[in-house]
Image 1 (cartoon, helix red, strand yellow):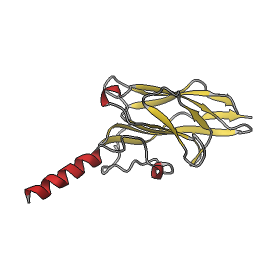
Image 2 (cartoon, rainbow, N blue to C red; image 1 turned 30 degrees about the vertical axis):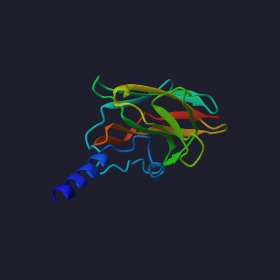
Image 3 (cartoon, rainbow, N blue to C red; image 1 turned 180 degrees about the vertical axis):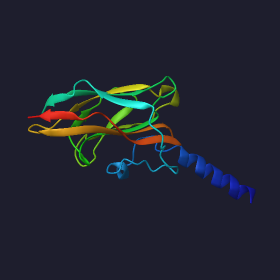
Length: 166
């Protein structure tokens, strides 16, 4: 009996760790991590800002996610630019970035996710480059799922609208 309890506790603890090597492909559409706990219902202590509110198609834009306080670090992340419910554009992550990688969510590099890293290296602020497709002419919002840890995360953190013109 004790052995069964220890085994269940170990499985539960492992599940709360989440996906240490990045968001699973199954999260691309709904952006919900497959953690064994629900998302927070409170307002997220993170913001998404951009280098401009207007950008030309094909021109890069800086996207910044920041914790509102020193304790609001980022353990896990899934970030997309969305036109309605569809990921658009392409992200660029520096090759030596120890925290993040691009993910293919319906197209090449349409999202950014965390990769395996040491908890002591959880950043409070991250910056990525996003480029809208050539000829694109519409409004987008950046949308993110941000995890403080495996048991505390927010889904649907959004930026202000960005106007992309061709």
